[in-house]
Amino acid sequence: MALNDEVRSYWEREACGTEPVVVGKLEKFSKEWFEQVESHRYQFEPFIHSVAQFTRHHGKKMLEVGVGAGIDHLQWARAGLNCHGVDLTDEAIETTRRGLEVHGLSSQLQRVDAETLPFEDNSFDLVYSWGVIHHSENPQKIISEIHRVLRTGGTFIGMMYGRYSLQSIKMWVSYALLKGKPWKSFADVIWNHVESIGTKAYTVPELQELFSSFNSFEGKPITIPYELKRFPNFVRRLIPSSWGFFIALNARK
Ligand SMILES: C[S@@+](CC[C@H](N)C(=O)[O-])C[C@H]1O[C@@H](n2cnc3c(N)ncnc32)[C@H](O)[C@@H]1O
Image (cartoon, rainbow, N blue to C red; front, top):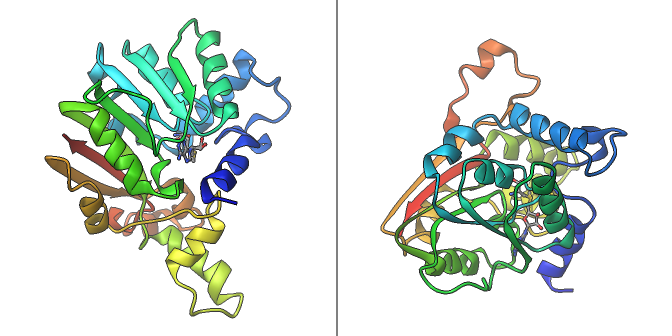
């Protein structure tokens, strides 16, 4: 099975962030269900607002690559952008469409593999992709496609996983050290145990290289509440953000 077929079948089971532990017994696609998914998302990833700066981009033509449950897509639509979105799964496209509908909003959504984007060159002012590109078989292909569809001067905003992070250490302890296989690399553990099979994680210089066709690039690691879990507050304050599993990205074509 090709990797992206496996990635697709993993994410078809449920859109990211809509697991039973989040939504409980709420009726799927009801207003309360979407409100719960949204409040859970921003409780655990509050920094998305400062990275994305949704309202700053009012009026722009935007493409989101990998909409998932569509919660960030809803923020883009609320902020008055001309929204387009793609995802590898029908589940994500349907969830995003229903969520927008509940709020009287809409977007042009398509199920496609973002390694080949069905848009003309230079068609977007902004491309956004949060936690998606590292799942695909060929991340460089998606980044080249994002560069192609962005207009000159257009912006890419996103997030990809960082390899040398606190979260990677915690996972390495569970899946390598405690399993008696300390020779396993962080990359191996992340590939096999973070969400769909084949997940990749990078250093900032590696990301810089992947985005080298862009005129400017910035990658800033962020520590996430999940990786700080179980550390007392005084220890949390000592952990540098450079140990973060999420690398916030901003690149200009
Ligand atoms: C971790 S979820 C993130 C979704 C959303 N951006 C969020 O932050 O919740 C990863 C998403 O990427 C999508 N995805 C993975 N590979 C893709 C590809 N090659 N093309 C388009 N979407 C892809 C998956 O279907 C899934 O919805």
